[in-house]
Every structure is written in C-alpha cells, then in structure tokens.
Length: 139
Ligand code: 5GP
Image 1: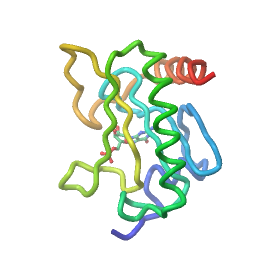
Image 2: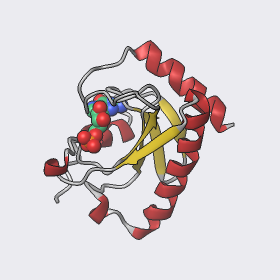
Image 3: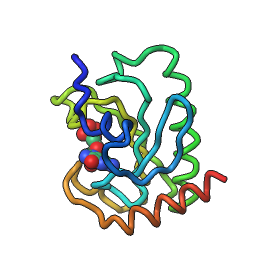
Image 4: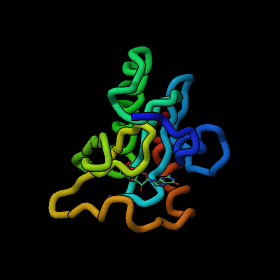
C-alpha cells in the first residue's frame, strides 16, 4: 500500500494537529483515540511512514511492541480494567480507516460492549484527564 503523508496520524506526528499525548520516545508515539471504543482507548504509532504492518521497517518492530506493552500496562492500571485488548487492522476490508500503522489499546470489562469503531468524538477534557492518569501510571 502506498503511504499518503497527509493522513491524520502523519499530521499528528508532524505536530500539525493536536493530540493528547501519553508517551513518546525516539521511534514511537502513544496518544488518546479521539473516538474511543472504551474509556482509556489509546493508540501507538511508529515514527516512520508505514501504512500497515507489512510496511513496518524491522528496526521499528521492537520499539513499537515495547511501547505497546508498556502503555497497555499503564492503561490497565489507570482504568482498573481487568482486560486489555490489542487490535491492529490492515486494509479497509479489515476496518482500517487511518492508513498509518497503529496498535489500539482498548480496556475491556465483563459485560461492557465496545462502542462502535471510529464513531463518536469524546470531549477533549475527558481525553486530557485520562491521558494524565495514564501518564501518571507510566511512572
Ligand atoms: P483504524 O480504523 O485505522 O484501525 O483506527 C483509526 C483510529 O483512529 C480510530 O479508532 C479513530 O477513532 C481514531 N481517529 C480518527 N481520527 C483521529 C484523530 O484525529 N485523532 C485521534 N487521536 N484519533 C483519531
């Protein structure tokens, strides 16, 4: 898949659009999903132009998984959710809507259905408060 540098996450990475940052290092960035499927829904992206998993350079694979693991633990701690789902969609037929590779970190609770994918915007102040809780849980 060709990479379109005007996609929304590329624009976030370039600082052209705002986001609620949770964690950042040399090769990765984690921030709140603007239309969460559950409270605490967080995204992790590599800082390289990869549209999907197949396009990820090997040197980003380890750092991307390490950030996902670390942030997932913090999301679990911050939300108190007993389950954490990691999702990653490749291709529009799989439901992918933003064509910059990302992992979804989604808290799950018994009996709580997921909200619809990329459907309803969350209030910025709620996202900011949750990002702060997750950053605190990262230590
Ligand atoms: P995908 O469908 O590609 O797996 O996931 C894209 C995710 O990006 C969706 O969960 C959607 O809610 C989220 N999203 C879409 N636009 C924005 C945005 O402008 N900012 C943030 N933070 N998340 C976004």
